[in-house]
Image (cartoon, rainbow, N blue to C red):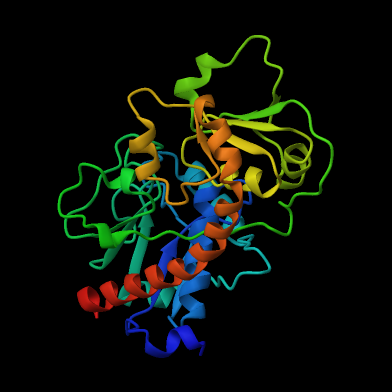
Amino acid sequence: MTPESASVLLPKRPIVVMCSTFDENSGGVIVLHALVDRLRALGADAYAYQNSKDYAETRSAWIRRIKRWNQRRRQARFQTHPSMDVPLAPEKLLGEAIIVYAETIAGNPLQSPRVARWLLHRPGFLRAGTKIGIGEEIFFYQEAFAEGIESVTADRLLQLRWLRDDIYRDLGRPRSGSCRMIRKGTNTAEQIPKPDPAILLDGKSHAEMAEIFNATEIFYCHDPYTMYAYYAALCGCLPVVIPQPGLSAQAWRAGFELKHGVAYGEDEIDWARATRGQLIADMHAAKERETDMVVHFLATLQARFG
């Protein structure tokens, strides 16, 4: 038991987080794995569970068997990062567990009466038609993701970060030019100049991006809420978020917890450069706040589901 877990109110039920196999290029998958790891570090009986389908809608029995076999084969390859403690849940635990879904999971596939929903983006943004179920306990990664959802209070903030300072660090190399990432910011892609002198980062590995961040001066980021802005700053590359239609700098920053060192538009470049040091300090301080959020998450689940 860690010092942090000594006074934690733990649910008596196991907690099962539905997630995919580890993918270092998927921020959503990373934080779902990180949640299981943090919960277990605090003494909770927490597990991961891969989403599964029964393919009952497939008319052909032969094709249905093939799909189910392929699914079992993929699940047998479930992986997590070596630094994280993320075991798969035994099937026998599912009936008594508290189930945690991200906002991309449609409905309640495990048919659990105890559901917590973690909004890692606005519901419906990444997968159309997904809705919040009645009676679910709602938590959010950014305030903006819960906008318009009634009865969701500010204390439901749950943020976890996996800071890859093993890869992303400033190597003190000469810099020139810029790089660019689009990811979920396709609605501002029309602002990209043609031809674009910036190096496109989409599809590259973490190691490749760290090299580029260490070789360039400016990182143009079309995805307004992404860890890559912080990763660029760790490497000494200045992150500039491309302003989103209808989203002011004040509104964007209200949903972006670490507010220094990142420019919202090119007009803020000088300010972001001057506050980079504060951003690095804020990133380290955020780790302590994250533990407090996870403790509150556990207490909320205990109060509601026992």
